[in-house]
Image: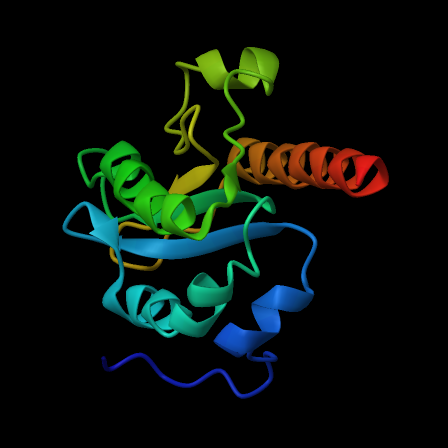
Length: 152
């Protein structure tokens, strides 16, 4: 959809998801929902769904929107349905990021559903605080994934 290919970035196939212990899915928002490209990727996981190969695996999400009213929380809420149908365990960050969740002095994306950023016209880069929240989310979900794997 007019996005240039990123040939230097490895591309995972839908069937390779079964090899993962846990996931953090990230995508841009289009009209308050995940971008069609990512939805198409998840739509291609029907074989994994049929055999429930992703069931019980933890998953989180992060997102970017063009504006503060761009649908960060609705994107998260509509993406959760994909995880639920697979039997995946949605892992929100809640307010575990602490004071960073309550920051009011600077523009910051993200919510209790996951970390996020505001991309504007595509030229805005994530702030230090947004990157710290994303790192926290990665560590948080990795810790939960490890605990679940060790308990299995």
